[in-house]
Amino acid sequence: MGNESNFTSPRNSFQTKEGKWVALSASAQAPFERLIDLVGHPELKTTPGSGTIRRGSKRKPGVLNRVIGDWIRARTIEEVLQECEKAEVTIGPVNNMEGIAKDPHVQQRGSLASVYDRHRGRRFPFPGCDSVCPKSGEIRFPGLPMGAANGVVLGDLLGYSPEAIGELKAQGPYEN
Image 1 (cartoon, rainbow, N blue to C red):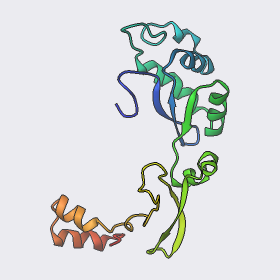
Image 2 (image 1 turned 90 degrees about the vertical axis):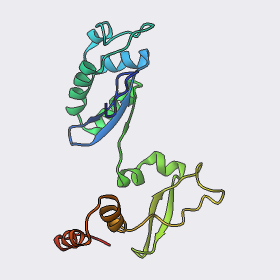
Image 3 (image 1 turned 120 degrees about the vertical axis):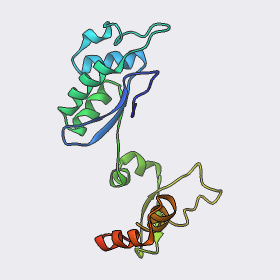
């Protein structure tokens, strides 16, 4: 089902005009109706399987995903986020690490920690974990360097022979 849900819709990730992604959830009736008006398909509010949720019924996501996806795909991420915010529809960007570091909400909350990476010899922003870290809240290291577990994954987990692993290393890049 991917990002969909078998008990509520519309709820999915959609790609924007420039290839970025947003995650949307508008399954409650009022936001659903605002979204359907926004994307220009008010008839879906009353279409069986798409519109009003009644006791024991569900919306079917197929048509909804298509019309919402078409609307989002025709706009930039900034346009989609602004229009959905005005319509009070729950939506947000699906960020990579750079996007997380630049996100104003993340910055305002102070959700990034400065972590020293001994392999790179420098500090860099790293998502903090205020509520789940031990009492100190300290992140001691950012994780293993890229490729550090290649031998374990390829050999122990996937059963590659040392010779096959050597051939993969020779094809490069194989950081370990």
